[in-house]
Length: 159
Image (cartoon, rainbow, N blue to C red; front, top):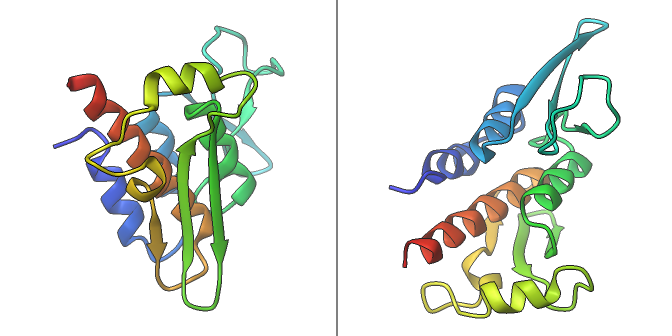
């Protein structure tokens, strides 16, 4: 079983966002979580990989990735630098797939070297394709695609 199987299952089965689900997504990434309380509101932050104090601006806000599209995309960009995502929503479903963006000026060459191979015989965009029904959970669809890609990266590393 992959290290992301549980969070992918929980996201797929989620009927909507929750702070617990957002927190567990953060914990599944292996990023260091901090809890900041203010005005009776919890806010989850994640570490940029440097040891700074709580008030340092290098901490990036991660409040509610299972609810907020902005927060889901922030986490996606932190976990898969240089990757792209495409998603949309209609009356029936929320759809998303992620892929290495070989045209990225910063990460494109690295992504070509590391991820030019297909994963389980599929292009990355097909492997990570999510069709989440019913609609109304686009941030969750992005997170499922992200964790599916991370799972695929782990599979490649084990080869």
